[in-house]
Image (cartoon, rainbow, N blue to C red; front, side):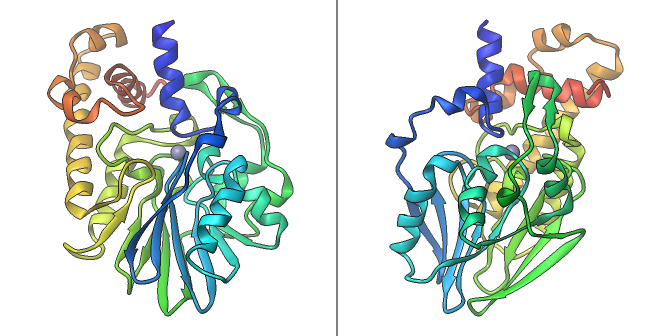
Length: 300
Ligand SMILES: [Zn+2]
């Protein structure tokens, strides 16, 4: 039972769950943090929102949950009198696309990597949690999709989104505001905690490491980095996360190779030296070990 709760908590970080329908969104407050001139991070519940506001209107990255749309609109109105014109989705999970339908209905153009639209268009199943996600309504779907990359020229900046090979899912994009020097990593970066990796959606630990390397190749020491979950950070935080992923993989891969069972691996507490710093988020050490074992043993 306890294990089940842990798993549910891990999943709640990244995909909508029936339990979330009962979450009391009335208590959620949307906070805005200015990261650069004209660029903010918004937090509430669900994935962190990135925002550019200026003469061309509002360009928004991810939409959290549907019940929060009015509060998010109110927070945006406090930053800019102009309307939201574009909504970019970093991936398909419900805590990042839950507000899509509300915004899409008002004419906001939704943009994402093509695998995001594919997965949102059909029922999804996450094996690890035995969880089904129904197809999204038409208004929630991206109107514009891309394969490898897409550029937006808004508010005096060049905003570039890059698809990274399967990492947290198979449709992740990271978004870089070139002039503002702000990077949104989506759920390829959980700042200060173990991440959820959606193996059923094509995610892999190797891809997570690759996505971090891609992010680390951009910007400089003063780049502000928006994670999918956790506080805003910088490239040193992203590097620490990337190094944790490598250490975790290297701790569990030899045990998988030696033929240990999942229970044996968990009993060995292979990530013990990392758990104090990284194991206090949604994904607890046992869940993290299970994710890695499942990925590295090829038993997805
Ligand atoms: Zn996610």
